[in-house]
Image (cartoon, rainbow, N blue to C red; front, side, top):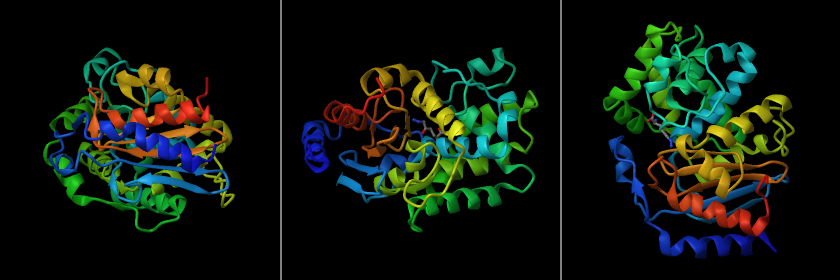
Length: 306
Ligand code: DON
């Protein structure tokens, strides 16, 4: 069946549910988004786009950015990264602090908030937050083949102003000696990478290398080594949705990563990369209608890993 017809089916299946779920409000700037938005984009190995709905509208990718920072850190920092962060599912919410005390300030994995802060700290190194943020933005623009990818400073500012919880996590790790940089330096970079604004089309394109062993199949550019790409996908499968990761694997069966902006990135190895967006979230911060759309998509394409 043609992908366009499958996408039409997916869009029809979610239509009665548009607006379901709860738009994130703990970052005030995110609460302003229209809950009925829905977009989906798929990019395949030939660089062909299959899109529907609000696929060209920018949204805040939030925690989906952790996939890119993690991939970059594995490549740059190498295996010593695993001295600072684990690789087990947390079974806890993205901003939970309880395991940090029991586990000596070492976050369970790179995709929960404290894990992503450790990754960001390592990527900043001694060059400052701005240089790291610029490098990440340049990488995403290049991989998305679109210079209009941007950081929404209003969202970053809004998150910083209400960031007591993330500050607590960072200070807690600092107390254990797990962050090299100042807490505010790490957070300034963290809030900005979470505030990256991309459309489904740009996001699916930028992550295409993850579906093809770390190499962009269109440009031939190697973004990460193939063995590291496997690890990024493994972490997404096990930890990409926090305490909802089992449910996502059960229903969809693809490496995925959610963001509280309502986006979900899913990787179908050897097939393509998929981005969906719908702002209403379930209790774990995964887009409710986005997950529904992915479930329908894998049912029709057979792309589940299982
Ligand atoms: O740190 C935060 O709370 C947000 N910048 C990101 C959280 C997030 O996207 C969780 N994902 N579902």
